[in-house]
View 1 (cartoon, rainbow, N blue to C red):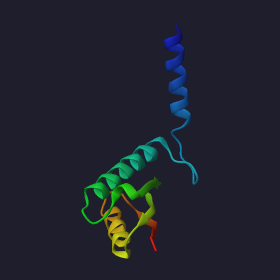
View 2 (view 1 turned 30 degrees about the vertical axis):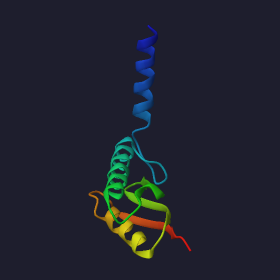
View 3 (view 1 turned 180 degrees about the vertical axis):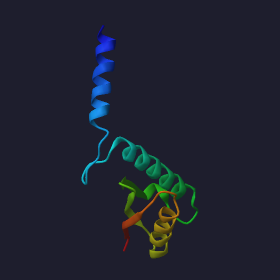
View 4 (view 1 turned 90 degrees about the vertical axis):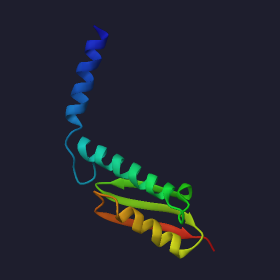
Length: 100
């Protein structure tokens, strides 16, 4: 009986969490954003110019925010270009800082 109650509760929470708003993602948007984040991180890690481990990636409603530190301005620009090339990305906010 406890398992059934859990499943009913989980279904109710999932149904309630499906709708999005301006400040909250729908379930579908959340999954899309998680996929975009994973693709951007993977691409950054595979790039020979950018140090992908030094860059954090967050996605909200298909807007990717990059943050962290790099050694050169060209690394910063390259990271942004990589993120822009990922399918589904609407906008990239590049908050990466160049070490001085």
